[in-house]
Length: 186
Image (cartoon, rainbow, N blue to C red; front, side, top):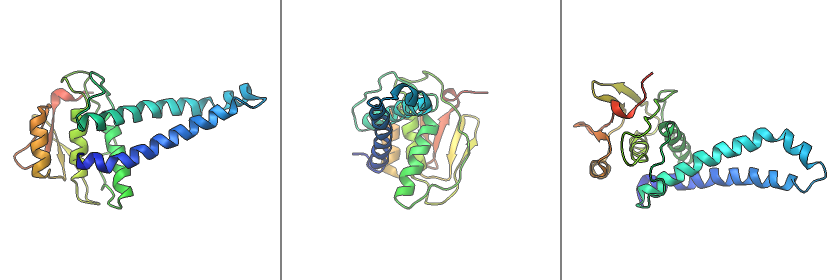
């Protein structure tokens, strides 16, 4: 299993368990006499659980695809970079190696510039995971796109990314470059 996947799986499973617990609680309300009124007051929880299940399902698909089992096929998520950053942040915190400060908002991804929509967020997660604990990171604009600054990918990760033929590439200095064609422009 990929080292990043190994680090992210426990955090992802914990979040899935939390969402399942919320849904189980809502299901239990159905057996109560005032179920309709109670569920109506909990509509926000149901909507939040649905959004979480959507996000977590996609992240689970990314981990599966990175391990050789592409369940996502053509599924694209414009917020894939943000979702991956959030998962990496939580997993790093669990390992007591907090991700340092970085941009508050991240660019959204284009809909379909490459066949495997999971590869770019996965490459981005690899870059974030390589940032030394507590060190700042950022996105530096270059003529070709956005470079993930503050990290240097290890040789094994670089080789895997170069073999994947995604539109994100490794620079000569070992950082990740996200091509402009991958990103939505305001």
